Image (cartoon, rainbow, N blue to C red; front, side, top):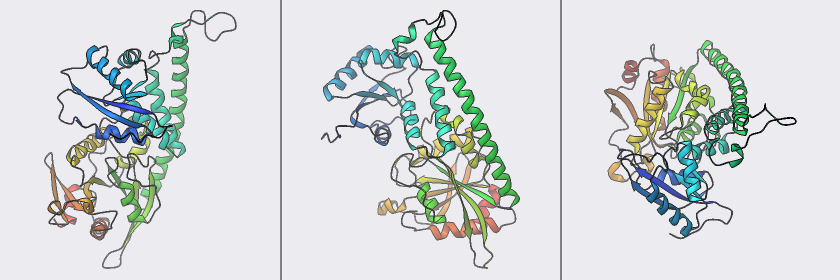
Amino acid sequence: MIDTAPLSTARVLLVGVDFGTSHFDEQLEELGLLAQTAGLFPVRAFVCKRKAPDAALFVGSGKAQEIKELALSLGAQEILFDQALSPAQQRNLERHMDMPVNDRTMLILEIFAQRARSHEGKLQVELARLQYLSTRLVRRWSHLERQRGGIGNRGGPGETQIELDRRMISQSIKRTRERLEKLKKQRATQRRQRTRGAHMGVSLVGYTNAGKSTLFNALVKARAYAADQLFATLDTTTRQLYLGDAQGAGRTVSLSDTVGFIRDLPHALVDAFEATLQEAAQADLLLHVVDASNPSFEDQLIEVQRVLQDIGAAHVPQWLIFNKIDALEPDRLPLRRMDTYDFEGRELPRIFLSAKSAEGLDVLREKLSNWALSDEPHGLDQTVGVLDL
């Protein structure tokens, strides 16, 4: 491959280990996109197979040596693993490779730290980062093995540096949790006010880069940041969406754009973003945006459903919005603008559209208007009926 990395961009070697799972990315395309989103330059992908992770080096000593030699030959400055590494594995690999080694979890945390804009978003990312860091104190810092104590030093006699650092991180986690709890209560108050105002809530959810923010902007004429990249936006944005109908009796609903999901989303981030994700759990309707042009859209759909289950939003009525039909080949274009999609025994309403070209947006608006004006819009059966499928 032609090396076009800027001089200031860190060169990274991507590593993926196939343990026989169905969702393994042989080309490490998503990891490469994550690396680029974080401002890194992937120089090559290294893939190997194992039956189970090696307890010490994750890939075993032989493959670890191969990875080290390849990284040195390519001038890589860092190694990125597509799977999560334990603190001991990360420490051992860094000692063996003699260069930084990070995993998918740390990469996602770094992206979130770069992209968070609101005060709440920054607090949520900071909490997740502190929780991750608290398990990595034994990684590679030799000064953590020395003891500190005595007159004029922090801590009691014999208290190790690692114990001091762990205590400081624990205190920071506690303070951050308390600040987030206050913001969570504020969000709950705002939701109650919208409920008292007879506003129904609709939340956009979906895999990262499925086009949620583009659809959000198209529906409410907003200017939320949208780009063809992973995690273009992290902060939940809510706007009022006016829905007219043929009888002229329109209604307004609250439309929220939420953070995108991704495979193996770190649990620390799911926990940290609980306040934000509650917008989805408390919604009256979920618009699950799917990138119809992505060959792996089924795996992405399953991953989003898993996260919705984790945050207690699986019960919320849901429509599938198959976006980006403008990017489909002619032979893959849908024959109907609407149909249903069978997911684990549930018949979910599905609408095909392109948020970018506005094709099919009129259909979505019409169905949302019918849903908002129906007598019982909250149940899944009524949702299907309103769509006239």
